[in-house]
Image 1 (cartoon, rainbow, N blue to C red):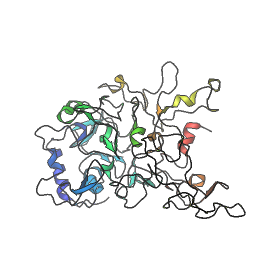
Image 2: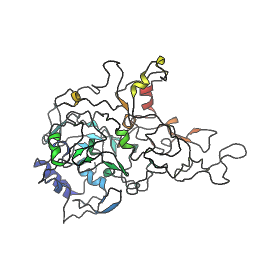
Image 3: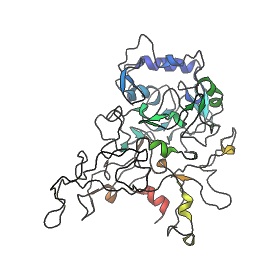
Image 4: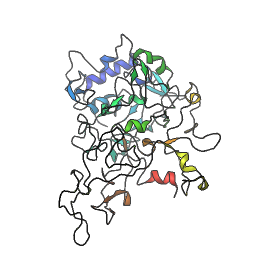
Length: 449
């Protein structure tokens, strides 16, 4: 376990929790009373010694955020509560584990000091999002969302990296989460990469991402003290996914604020994203760091028809698996038209976005089944939508790639993919791509070939 060096913050957090000042399920992250003391859990107006800065709405970094810590990165600062051996939150995102802390498991005797608020999570179980260092507390991650990975490629809105000047090379917890609260599920920011993905119409929340968890408000989290009553009845589930659909919006729509191309199944124009911008670069399959299409006189193949090493193939349309579509489309019979030859399966290991259910979210509702709201009572088909988090974890995965799952594409179009042992995954990022299962286990669990 990593030894925490920023003692001042830890002491303050412990004091905050022991005093019972944390509100409901977001601790110091929202539901602030007019005379709140929660600000002091992380900030000092005149005596901060932290050099960590803050980022504005245009993703531009600024000077000190007045934090109480000697942490050198924002991840370290967040790990003071959400990391190993931390006295704060039960959501240990460093090890991808729901551990002992201030959140108690509903219906289960909680450890001493864990009675501030309740959840429907399971102790010592893997977090829905996985972890940045480990998954389930022990297994080392293979691919993560690249926290604090300076100069690391962050694939998304352009083929050479996402277009976020304050984030590319400086990806951190606050790139996705707003520590002061938001209208969305899990404090997901309302404004990302220049796009509104949630927010408030004055005081009324307008979320993009909601949940089927017990007590979750379909209309989103109210701002400040108005959200206290909502949080008081909310029982989050950090270890069993209960993602919800929201008409015209979704978790995939939120992710697409950065991964702008990925929400489009088939690009009509190469490198065009759904937000209206056109990506300025093209991908060089032999050298991920290079950009640009074929230059004048550049040969893609030699006289024998073999691809030329290092040649840039230019912009090509990408074809992608559909998302934000109901799984039932793949469960039609062959006679229904446009149906798959083999109907897809609804696997409990592949969480779907289910229709929001007032009965499911009601306080005291039954949350003992992994998917109690999964099937349509008339058709018997799953009514859940396939989303980004159906196949991927948000924070990190232990899944490893081998064989064809780590094949590279060669330059040109003649000899297709080649298996390269040890490559770690396919381009563009040559990693396990945050997938929930080894190789293409996410495909087989659904398609059952």
